[in-house]
Amino acid sequence: MTAPPLVLTIAGSDSGGGAGIQADLKTMLALGVHGMSVLTAVTAQNSQGVHGAWELPADAVRAQYRAVVDDIGVDAVKTGMLSSAELVETVAGLLAGTRAPVVVDPVGVSKHGDPLLAASALDSVRKQLLPVATVATPNLDEVAQLTGVQVEGEADLPRAAAAVLAHGPKWVLIKGGHLAGDAVDLLTDGSEEHWLRAPRLDNRHTHGTGCTLGSAVAAQLAHGLAVPDAVIAAKEYVTGAIGAGFPLGSGIGPVDHGWQFRR
Image 1 (tube, rainbow, N blue to C red):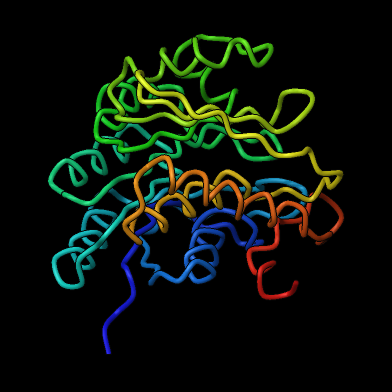
Image 2 (cartoon, rainbow, N blue to C red):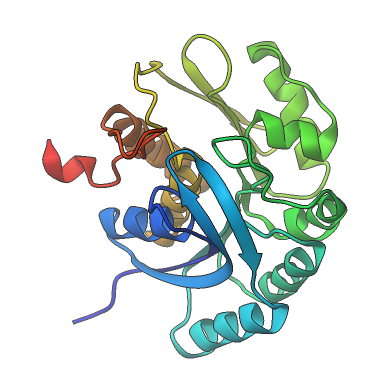
């Protein structure tokens, strides 16, 4: 018996189970890979927002990473919440020595608008983390944070992608889900473009969408898919998860990571 593909998430914990490490591991299980984790922060979080966050020491992050990668190995890596410049630089240094594909979700704010990345860390994301990314997956707010480009409509997506690519990732997936109309994303490496469209679903319970998409891309890359095919498959999975998102608590509920098993 052989092990399934191995995927490592480096991210924060969401105590409500909708985003962060919890969403990553649920996605990985649903997509047939073995999920492993490096915890970067603990948050007190529920359906209404983030009520507290505590960053782990860089040494603890480094020790978790080395323990997993040096013994078990890894076929793909996904990064999420890296709240400080020190953590960004620590993780970027570790990833620079890893040959597996890397999906960078440059988490800036939570679904509820709570800041999850210090302003002082933005330069480290630009100069150290994005250059080691196989695929970067910023949403429109994160594009504005990192590049200053404001996306008002679909026509602005190529300009936003070019601005992110200038910082060094091989591919960028600009997530246009906050725009009006269909949910349109742009995947490009600067030479070829893939426009990914899905109908906008009438469901407010979308907590964890970004984490889930990044983890789904990493899982598909671990299965051996090329970047465009991995992103297309991940988009299909996330669209189904959004459609099946359910209420939880008194605020915004999570997407349903196991929607495929409940059809």
